[in-house]
Image 1 (cartoon, helix red, strand yellow):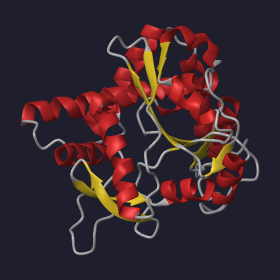
Image 2: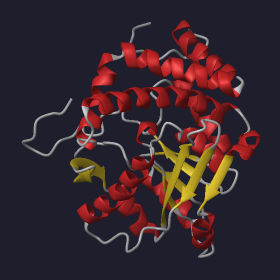
Image 3: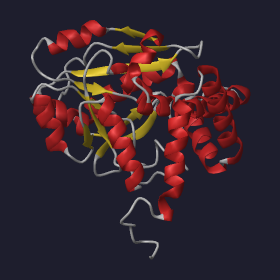
Length: 304
């Protein structure tokens, strides 16, 4: 079998590493809490030390977004980011493989009245999620209070894609491919809430440039388009691990006002401002490891 061919059976040796990863996640989900934190911290520090490319991306992002930090503060935030994202791997495993009910006592949910008010209008809401390290655990915890579908990017590995989709379908009402705009619109019009994360770089064709931490960032136009097509309220959702490393806070903010405006740049700027404010609360828990500023305005040099 050539490298480009896809095995027809998940028993093929090519999938054995994936099976080991899935097994490790299932085991990790049941570890005692303190051990989860220790393992996650160890993973984060290992990646921080040896993944030079990923560390360079993180360092670049944080220098761009927090120019006010001195060298020592910057280095500390980079290290804390890797630790938080290492713990996030264990949190993802927990969100995917455990019943979220067992974590109800660890959650404080603020701003529920905003979603309750939106639902009272008899239509679905578009939930703005953010790529914090707690993303998938946050989705599981959110399901204890409000039902929602989720928009996601399918994984390239078909076995892991099946595992991930089944896990998310257990947490969310439906997992919707990010390219399925009709599916998103249909679900919202049918009264379902849809969780959607607009804070990644999907390239020039799908985006406009809008400020994010004072840096022009390719920001997708789809948030405003979905809101315009459905009339749905756009609900920012903030979620983070508390400083005690044992509890979590979820918080709905009021729906975006006057959104969409019809001006793609203004709409993208409004969305980015909400996301930026949320990140500033716990900057180390954001996924700075991805190339948020990959696409640049014409004429500008690459940043990575």
